[in-house]
Image 1 (cartoon, helix red, strand yellow):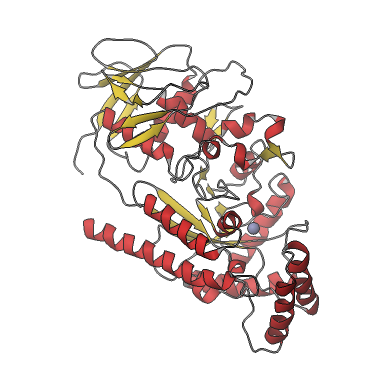
Image 2 (cartoon, rainbow, N blue to C red):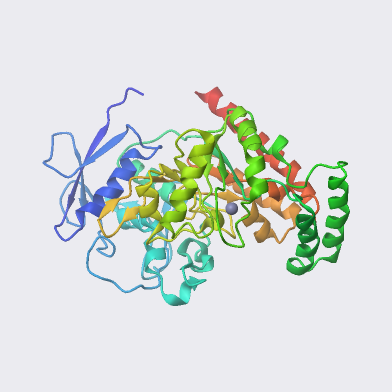
Length: 461
Ligand SMILES: [Zn+2]
């Protein structure tokens, strides 16, 4: 762009944990909407620096209050948090707070920033609320119930609050970033390759909808289709690879995640999987996909298992595997990140919602999680999962017209200034279940929308 970077000197009091502050400053500096536009430092003031007084008053410079709520090593007990709305330009941005303010506030007035932007960003990225959570918020004894997450409670998970906040802060500093069209990442988790591998599989498929979906019709439909597939008259219901795997190159990245082990009832990696996955791997490679690991149900807390699976997959795909996403999104904040780091995973794709679509970490862009014990960022990147097929199906209770509408509304709300990662399973398009036959069309329409955006980006550039 040829523009000079603006230097911002951040003055802050000694009470502030500088490692956490620096983590946030680093995130902002390297944020794709800011990159090469600004640089922060906390050293001696140079002539043209903009000075940001963070929590300490000073004249002729910008002031931002410091909450000293998260940037402190004092042990705090979890409290109920809220968000307050602040007006900025044509939109609204949100803080995190222990109290609710009266009415609407301005984000920036008389050289003062309305709230502690740095701690707010830290809150969303570090996932401290999931680490802190009270027992009453725990689901299955391990993780936070989605409905209790702040962004869900406050109903602001459909926009990237952190990305918006970064833009607003830049504007306060006098930097006006160009609107950047959203980037899209396409991923697939391959939990099971074909549905009807054997007579036993066929029988299971007949009984399963009756028990779990209370649908006798789907049970009978499965029996009918099983016979048809078995006789070679129809494609297997999970055999959607011919349209699922997209060959075009308008994606930021395309990744296919394969299972490579597992011992729970939720892991479907068996001799049939091992027989068939080379073929799918080859088609995916041909279509420009990167291979990633889909670590099994218990592997998020079992190092030996994790290592075995990564070695298996690397052995079969012939190269290092650096992308992963935990099966069932099982991510234990106190165990999983250290394990990913230890085994050289470069990008994890797990942090998303299982029953909603939207931004769990406030951003769509990749970032580093925070290692609280060591007071440092983790080395690997987290790329947030924004739209997962099964989450939206759950949310719409299998109503595919609603699925289509919500997906469309969500995308049109987020066509700029973020990144959207999709996860579509091959098994989602199972034509034996309810209205699922409709998803193929919806999926292809979604891809057309992404392509349209890409063409627009190229026209602008
Ligand atoms: Zn899975």
